[in-house]
Image 1 (tube, rainbow, N blue to C red):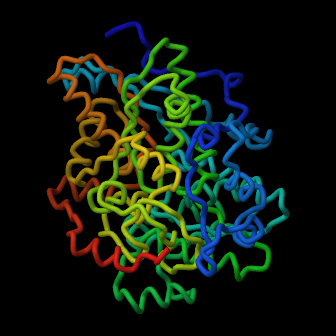
Image 2: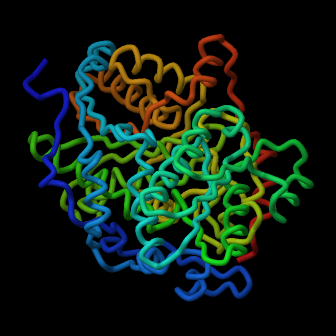
Image 3: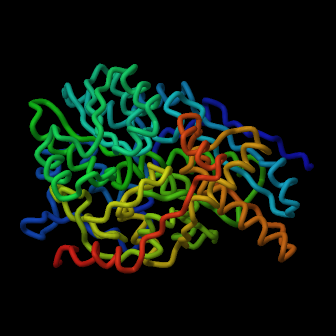
Length: 454
């Protein structure tokens, strides 16, 4: 054991006062969102029918490197930020690796995840605009919980559409949202036009994030003073999550440590985008080099098996078209336990950087993820969320590679949240009942066949 502390904290005075916009350092920017009717880039005015005005401004800003964090948001951050950077000494010892493993822990708030970083920002902008209601989707429930918290703080009514399989698997997560004043509807539901259509086309479906997004957008457009707030994928969310990476880099700099490998789980992409942001900025500017790895579930492999194409962001096909690695908006993944990663596409920002070979992508089976989660819980003492455990799996694999090669590398991964509401999944694993469902090439071809002709 060396002299590096188990946990490294920044002080409140070191809390970042601006988010970092990695797009400002990209020579080739992410492709613009397109209006599906005209196939022309969407305008701010068009987006403002769905999203908050300030969020739209941030969404379309490819050039401003640092965007100030509002005082009210920064004050809220102080209740749970800066979050700790932890050296995983006991995991290192269990693996017998010469690698040094660090993780940025984002689960030290009631939502249990990193999602609160963007939820409170978007709720602030909604309140500042004079809105009364917000709508959203949620997969495993972390984003819905976070937005429920943000909405309660700013006095907004929150309407959450929760992916049906997670709604059924995680009843206590649902009750946390209701405790914060949100109403929670399993998706696809029979309360919206799109929900009824999806249920008709896919009888008995367990839902997906794409389905829930469609329902939330429809509801936002029907309510008199509402906007839709999204928990991942979009540029604005990746921007807000950059606070994770900014704090991580500041803590590592404090320790005099330069990472070799940076790992994040990836569903829509916000966690990975946030964690890697300042490191990717250095890489884009030619100041430093890092291996940056996105880890996704083998059951929903948008980066590793998807196509880089324009596609609808939602299953109901009411949202703009985004150029991204996608499995097709019609693809509904298996009811895996990593509900927050069950999205058919990937952030346009992540997708463009992946296409430029600025980062790597790997997929992993669910059973191997829970093996890693169990080892982490037993060595490091924290029960990780299934989503976060994809990054743990990859970090373990990289550490074992270092052991084989005799390399003393530094690995940093994002521990996005805790798994205390995921006990149904852990029970399946502990009882030996967890299987791996991986889509066939024929399954994926069916989704690709319906991609828009752009």
